[in-house]
Length: 502
Image (cartoon, rainbow, N blue to C red):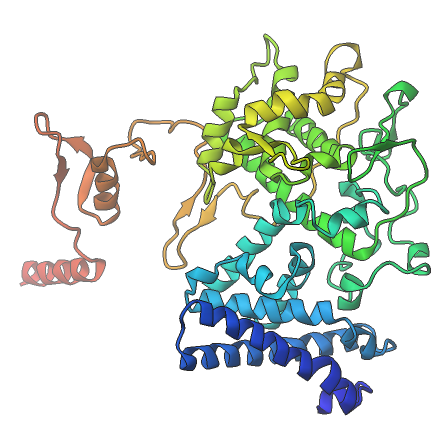
């Protein structure tokens, strides 16, 4: 109450905009727990946990908001019930995951509170920042997975509010959401700008550098090098429903849209680099071609993402660019079988992504037509992207400017050492890009190598193996006695020296 008083918010506003809505959300959560046949004691305890967590996060965000924009009245923020509801829903997800309530696994929390994924993702990062010292690593990892699930598919459903915004504002290019005047732009975005709709005066703000035009395609200008684009090849602007309109001066994206596509592009480039690594596609120019194709499909053929998955569009982009870039001197062509095989090797990969792709949406009484990734490529993707992909071949090969790769989510994807799997041991895991240089390495291939290979690695790490020598007949690993500890060895050596001195 003291915090609200310091910010100029009266008690009546607090009761109306904070306390009463919170009681209603608590009742919704309680009803969902009753459906799971939880005891009354458990329901009361978990509802109390969510509410306490909500007030703690809410207080932290209000303090940060008042620090960033002290001149703005917090009553505007408190009037945004959607914002407060997303905070409460995210706190609910933290509690559900912490106590292992699998029957209410995400995205069930969105159904409990009637939330859209597009609104929910905006608060995840803020909740983690508010509770970073109190959340376990497992919970933070779960919230990161939730955010990725939202960005890759849930936010692209046909009923998502994202399409309403894209009908008014074109999809920004990756350079438009990354190149800002301040390097701390994302950190200084206020919560109120994440949830409020664009205002007339906000549309006039210069969010980007003057030399970057809003809505311009990176295929025309990159790194201050401009090429002429034939009028016949100029891509028309694509709306959310797939219809094209003549080129016109587009509006600038609002802060909330900028933040969304910054996260989306970061996730997309990490997925692309990971897939290229698994496919052993190491040429940087080829990666930029794939990224340029993927970015073009998002900007100018946005309808491809409706009710679909980011990885579906990515795998199609990899296939078509490898196909048109293949030559006798540069064998880079990959089949869909190769691409899907490498995709399955990703952590948490789901084969449903490439086995059930939307081909044709439902019309009236007809159910939607679905098929595998190859059917989608032949029936839908080629129709939208064939003309653009052909620009990378023939006489137009050198006329297409390539988009730069944006920064990914974290440094793990670009670290040559790989990802560290333990804080106690210097042990790293990374995709196998090339065979081991010598025969002295022990290799284990998941789902392919026999169990004895894994046993050999385990015994080697435990200092129970002398090398890779095996028995001639039985093929068992040849063991040697466990190595003596360094301290024991020094004592034994000292004892021997003393006896020799005598």
